[in-house]
Image (cartoon, rainbow over all chains, first blue to last red; front, side, top):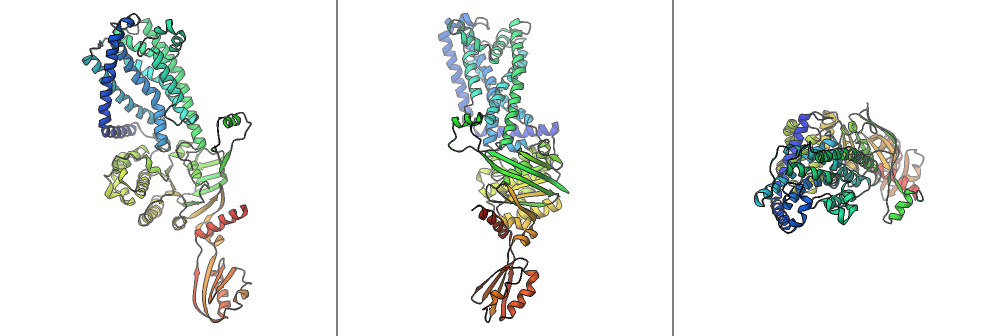
Amino acid sequence: MRYTKRKLTSREKLTVLRLITERRIRMWGRFKISSLFAIIGTFVGIATFFFLGVLVQPAITPYISDYGSGDYFTYVLVGMAFMAYAGISLSMYSNIIRGSYWGNTLEIIMSSPLSFPSFFVMTALWTYFTATLGILLYLLLGVFVFGAGIAITSTFWLIIPLLVLSCIAISGFGLMSGSMFLLADVKGNVEPISWAVGVLSGLVSGVVFPPEIFLTVAPPLYHLSRIIPHTYAIDAFRRTVLNGEGLSNPMVQQDFIMLALFAMILFPLGLYMFARGIRKAERTGKLARWGG
Amino acid sequence: MSIIDLEHLTKTYYVRDPSHNWKTTVKEAVGLKKKKTLTALNDVSLNIQKNEIFGILGPNGAGKTTMLKIIAGLLIPNGGEATVCGFDALKERQDVRASCSFLRSGGWIIFDYKYPLYKNLIFWAVVMGAEYEEVKEEVDAVLKVVGLHEKKSEFPESLSAGERQKLNLARCLLAPRPIFLLDEPTVNIDPYSANFIREYVKNTLVKERDMTVLLATHNLWEAEMICDRIAILHQGRILEVDKTENLKRRFGTEEAVFKIKGGVRGLKSSMEDIPCISDVVVIGDVVKVFGRDLRNNFRQIIDRVDGYGKIEYVDIIQPTINDVFMQLIGEVEGDRE
């Protein structure tokens, strides 16, 4: 038997990815009942917005007429679909750190020739994959059961770079949130950064109603909506999916530029804080749940 | 050839007592209150040779696991230097980590409780850098070594505490690295399996595969059985480090037991001038002589005893590492009192 390698080749990394996926699929299969309930929950969630749409449609039409046919249900459906990805980017890092810490795998992963970023990417790929399945189900139910007006347009491909850019930008907050576990010893389920960004984005970024509503009711909240990437991402997402608008549209251009700026600032900052967190844990002996 | 070099290694932890609150945190932050610290390692210098089984013994909280973590590249010391396999443990931590397999007590928690044993092992071995095809071939052999072969398709949730520890050991065996750090490796394991594992470590890992093993344990008998050298650690300081036999010779007390037919009156005082003897205890017709290096001075002792009567029974009881440990720790604890 030979000693283990100090670095893994791309082929070996793919083997690890395959084993991680196999294990995850098996875990997934173990919780069939919860998967079933999740599907029922999705259905009920969509139905709730469908019926809410019937009620609020007349009042909200002036605010959302820029998006598709101005149908409130379709508007919310697209917003919620995006927020599923945003939620993952925000919470995934702290979830991985928390899970690794309580499951005592953080030290093992640190000792693995699989680099720490590779481990994150591999875990993230599965998480995004399952989220994509969930979103597809969400959209399919929305379109085929509740009649949402979503059609595949010529600019539909833009949602891929848009999602990547949005996920990178929001991952900046996610990494900061993950770093709090190690930097500030925030070991509970509620972490201040992801909580604040999650609550703020849910309220002001335009998931269930457009931020322009605040202009007349509470202007400070409108200004808050301009300092988080979610607002620009959701707007661009809707313009692309519902209007078929592409990069030639100035609004979409502006959204992309803002997202790129957020990504350039937040992601390196998140990485820096995360690295500081790991370094602190290495100094204090808190890579594992129990010291020594 | 030295594979691990520790020079003046120091590690302190920041300790929070139960009365710690936000006021204390603020005071500490602005420097009005000094942070309470615990010194886990205090100026530790050691070098461990390649292909050696090195034991680290010490009471709870002596700093054994801290030392292993620093060697494994998982903990940054406050001072001193550590070189592992030629890599600097401060600057080249990723290379240091890749040089060590670290078996921690309780490390079995990483296993997925509802995933077959052999699949769990393959998964972690590959994550740790072992070749997938090789691991698939080796997994059966390693499960045999730890005595879990018949349970290979079972789930970890059905294993006893000892079996989980065996599984944890199997994980390390499947992803071998030049240095094997064992923290209480046979805890909870039955004596038969534990013995088999010790033999495997000694004969296969060290002799055949050229590995170096660091063993941190409270099982002094186990350390005596397999370690070439032993360091005794107490309150973060190394009290002694030497070959196992040398430690016993230097710090252990031999005991010579005589049963004498005839009178023993005056025997005790007649032995006082023999330098190697520290004490003589007479109980009826049994005389117990304590001292160091009695075996080499045995002729002289026998001559004295023989003059008092007929020797019916004689035995020399050799000291154990347990005696050495008790002696050294006792001296420090005694000084403290």
